[in-house]
Length: 81
Image (tube, rainbow, N blue to C red; front, side, top):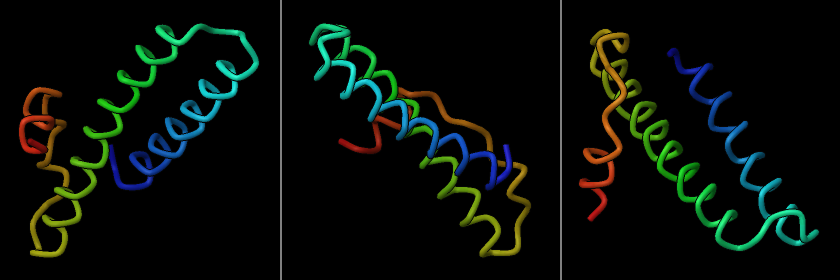
């Protein structure tokens, strides 16, 4: 995934978050469903932001950003603690 694709995916996920919150407010989904879906979105967002940061760092230092791969959720979340 290149930078534009990552940013497009991030934008789509942020829109999905808003739709989930709107669906909850409209009574279309229940709280546990919203929380489960939001948690999954947040994990994927964390992965995308991590990938984007690491690609930008490679570019900044003259390295190939295409060498960067998506890290597992466990690895990305582990760095946040």
